[in-house]
Length: 261
Image 1 (cartoon, helix red, strand yellow):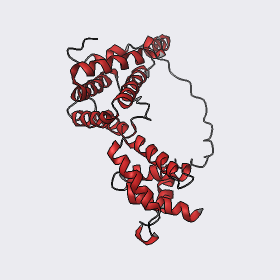
Image 2: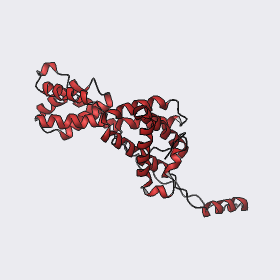
Image 3: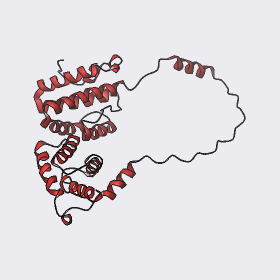
Image 4: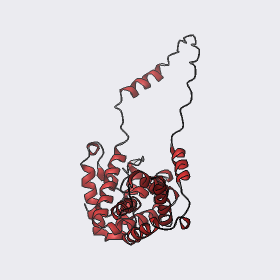
C-alpha cells in the first residue's frame, strides 16, 4: 500500500506540475493522499475532476490529464519524479499555527490608584456607550453572497467562460480604486473561486469597486446585456441573506454606470 501511494504521488507530480504552481500542486497531492483509494479508471477520473474543479482547468486539459495520469501510474519507476512526501509534510507543518507561548506569572498587584475624573471625558465616554453598536460585517457578507451566486451561475451554465472572467477581472483589477490589500485578497480568492466564501474584509466603497470590476469582466465575456442579467441574479441572491435588512446589496452597484436593474 505504501509503495503504491508513493507511485500515485510521483505520477501526480509528473502530470500536474506543468499546470499547477507549487501551492496548488501540494494541495492536489494531499487531496490524492486523503481521498484516492485505488488506480481504477473511476478513481483516476474522480481525482482528476476534483483537482480540475479546484483549479478551474479547461476541458481539454482535463482530458489530457485522464490519459496522462493513467499512463504515469503504469510507468517504470525510474522514469517518474522523486516522491514528494517529505516536501508535502514540510509544507503542511509550515502551515500549522505556532504553539502558544508558555504562561507567564501574574504581575505583582500594585496599590490601587484613585483616578482623577475629567468631567468632559466622562461625558464623551457615556455618550459613546449609549450609541448603538455598529456591525461592520454586513458589506463583506453581502459581497460574498453576490460573488458566490455569480461564480456558481457562470460555472454551471458557461463553465468554459469562468476562466475567461477570472483573467479579465484580474487584468482590470490593477486599474481599480480599491485599496491594495483588498485587491490582493480578491486576486487570491480566484484561485479557489468555487470553494471561497468571498467575504472580503473591505468597506462598502471598496467592495462596490470590486463589483464594478467583476461586472466589466462579465461584459467582456457575455456582453453588456448578459453581464447585467448575471449581476441581477447575483443581486437577488444577496438580497435573500439576513444582512440585506441592514445593508442594501444595491449599494455595491453604485459605481456601475448605466446599470438598468
